[in-house]
Amino acid sequence: MNQPLGMLGSIFQLFHLPNPTRFWYDMDTRGSVVQSRNQETISRQPLDLSGRSSETVVRMARVYSDVVSPMVVFAVLGFAVVWVDTPFWAGLAWGILHCVFVSLAPMLFIVYLLKTGRIADLHMRNRHERHLPYLVGTGCALIALVIARALGGPRLLQVLLISNVVGVASLGLINAFWQISSHVASIASATLFAGFVFGPLVSVALAPMVGLTFLARLYLRRHTLAQLVAGVALGAAPVLILASLGFLS
Image 1: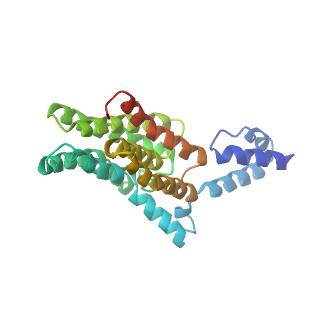
Image 2: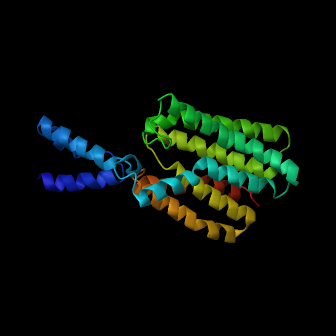
């Protein structure tokens, strides 16, 4: 009886869904329940926080995750977008403003949380650790959008900021009950956005980065398969909606 229930429980654990088989384990002895929970905790521990953190592949996956973090991705995309229809120096100023509010300020806030012991690591493996960063990220992007609107900033930058606000706010709302991948969401969003702005060949060229990010986060055990698929969908949704409304035409 325990073996089939264990297999069923593993399936629910893979997709990070509520595990109905826990009712059976709760009927077992206290020692068995504790052992089961300990094994579950170990199996969910990210590889870059485990004893395998020094392995070459694990380190490469972690470094790659840092390079394609949401703050880095949108900082680069912001600079690329503003220069489409803005002179160099004006575009540089708007790119810096976007970078400060969408990337630098949220990153400094996360570092502050890390230094003060409010989060365990920069990638925030625990869902409850992400509530404040998502709130601050949404607020910073919204402030940047208000400034860009008030001062007549580049049109495409304003569209990107709308996408930022909607995307980060959506991540925050979903995070209240389920943790999905912000890494995959951001790289999927940026790849699609770049395709609408610079042409479909750019999206094709950047698509492997989406796949590598997906595999890296899955390999590091930072997210489940379902959380990564949801991240891709959530990242693409705001861009597709804005495009369908004519903002990216």
